[in-house]
Amino acid sequence: MSTISCRAKSNLPSEEQFKDRAERDMAIACYLALITWMDENVGRIIDTLERCGLSDTTRVIYTSDHGDNIGHRGLWGKSNFYLESVAVPLIMAGPGIEPGVCETPVSLIDLYPTVLAALDVPVPADEAQRPGRSLFALANERTDHERLVFSQYHAVGSEMAGYMVRHGRWKYHHYVGYPPELFDLQDDPQELNDLGSDPGHQPVVKNMHEVLLSQCDPQAVDAAAKQRQAELIAYHGGREQALTVGAPAATPPPGETSA
Image (cartoon, rainbow, N blue to C red; front, side, top):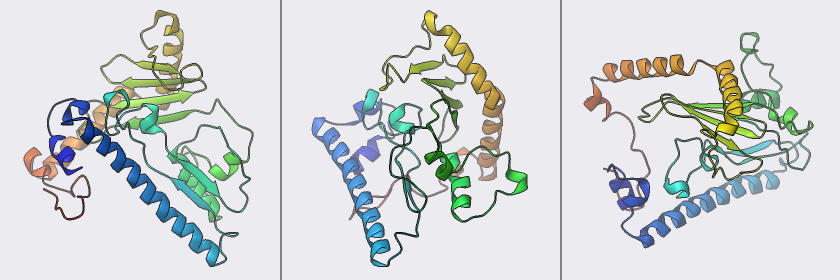
């Protein structure tokens, strides 16, 4: 993995960063090993709750902040809106949660009101208009396939703002300055057929863009994010100095040190 991290600094497409198929396979194996290790440690926590007699009175939420392309579409990493990057595990258990699968689209934004609900803490009056609903309530309601999910991305050197809207069967990607992407999750759950430029789907594209505009002004938010980023770079003494600030991007393998 360390050799992959070093060559990730090049400008080559992700797939071309591997020296051969064996190294690519090793990257996949390492990723799966990390997942296995994570699951093992979650299991240790659950086992401890059971041994302490707390499993019947403890609510557990198992989730993550993002997925990973792991070679899908030739991409390695995240920072995009394809399903393998934005979809995350979300498993809940505990008092008041009925076993089953809830197919209502949800977002990590829903975690904030969920934690408050778990602690019987009311949402502060000045935050009542925040987006998000308690997952405890959503999990026990009738599935709502039409629930809107909205995401945006501005970080890690992104050249332009990215936005995603999922509404019903449609998933819409908008990158400022670039053509939109549209996917039909009902007929194309793997998002292999971009309908963004298809003449027959332009009414859907137009409608989904209007849904996006109901959430934010894409250009204005992009400009605000870039302005704030410029202010932070200046605060740290310019671009070259800012690049030295912060922790390494990844944990080095055992026996190695980060550059």
